[in-house]
Image 1 (tube, rainbow, N blue to C red):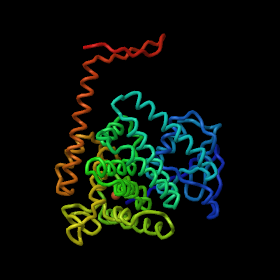
Image 2: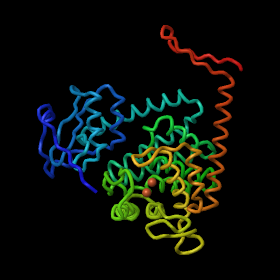
Image 3: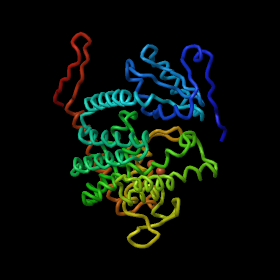
Image 4: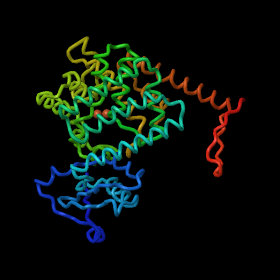
Length: 390
Ligand SMILES: [Fe+2]
Ligand SMILES: [Fe+2]
């Protein structure tokens, strides 16, 4: 794979303050994911500085005085071109400000979404946001006892809130379609896994919380895989595929290390990270485990068999540089075409739930349409909503 390197333009050198980073300085900065950085397109200003690192030069790229969406777009464009020598950062002391701003934007987006689509269940969306906060902490700060506690709490809230909720997976699928910027893969996998465990399979509360955590942690090893590889359009070379596959063992090792350093995480959660690309048919990696661990030594743990269904479904919903986004029924159809890869008992329950939710949403939509919900927009009088009978 060719590695592209970004060079700082003359204009940026003239406009911005740039300093050379020493090893000691590195801890002063915190990286920001591109997903979160996008949220700055929804704010009018910032009260901190966005730094743009190019090799060992740190550029004070955007501050309150220079803030513009055009500058935000410049950084997004550079990141999308997958240069290997750049990073978006804020100073660690400013991270809280950044975090609060992002949370505000997310809250607003969610309020707008709930107003726009009355079929979305607010409790499902709120539980998802909670998980998303825990997953973002994990990506940013790595595994620590504090992050592990947050993850456990968010998993507990999800399981308590959604115990009876049959439309949770459907609501999540609808939310991703309505506003893809709210998507968070690990949080989605956690939520879907928890709902499969508790609502669809009736597993006990403790197990369901662990399975939800398994979903949150399953891809933690991806923080060790280069960004350029994770987002590579097209096929991997055999060497690249090997590096990609390593996120399972790297994730497992990282969770085990965190456990040894005092994080309260169940060993079976680590096993989910290790096994989540194994397939029931035996064609997965890293070991080619097959079937159920309850039946034989080389089988896959039941927590993983749940999380791997959630993982594939969640990945199908989202658009990536290498694939399109699918809606819930298309995603289900694709999974049905390779149903041998999943535990048939779990998959059958999952399938039934999605189909039922889709029919339910369809009926509700028809009903709303038949009732003749008319939205009248009058610039002079504001927005009025009037319902008429069919
Ligand atoms: Fe993965
Ligand atoms: Fe995943």
